[in-house]
Length: 89
Ligand code: SF4
Image (spheres, rainbow, N blue to C red):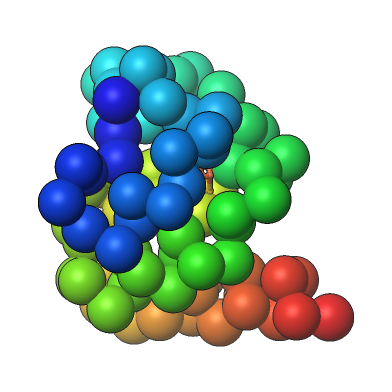
């Protein structure tokens, strides 16, 4: 299970990532791509991504974004802006 038991994310109790910790903490690029695809179909994608940004996640796929793959701070911010544009039209 990816979602922590004691956080505001507890309301994500039917999220499709439940039980898929290994995939969502992407020990391989292929697993990360699978996780991102699952997120893109998840109804919690936006609040999940928002929460991950607020918490400063540095590992795992959250809201369709691979936080483990931050090549540089500048690239990270650029990718987040792109994701927000895609999600908010
Ligand atoms: S967006 Fe991804 S990580 Fe977030 S709750 Fe949905 S499936 Fe899980």
